[in-house]
Amino acid sequence: MTSIQDVTDVLSSLPHHLAKNWLGNDLIKKTIAVSYDYWLEDTNIPMTLEEFVMQYLDHSAYLGELFE
Image (tube, rainbow, N blue to C red; front, side):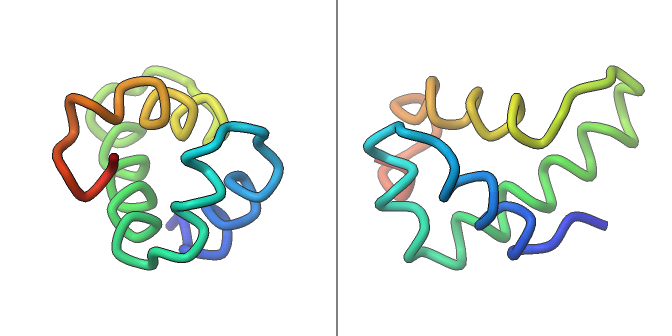
């Protein structure tokens, strides 16, 4: 199970401007953690948490106001 701390660790290592904003938002971090777990379970497509978070960052405009 992916934790908020796991997501925090990844976000804090990324130079993306939104990553810095998301570090202070536990709802976003929990959403990413839960989505990542479902992704791995449902698709069986290997992807690191960092790759998954980068997809969220790259497509934040499509995810709704909370993520922008």
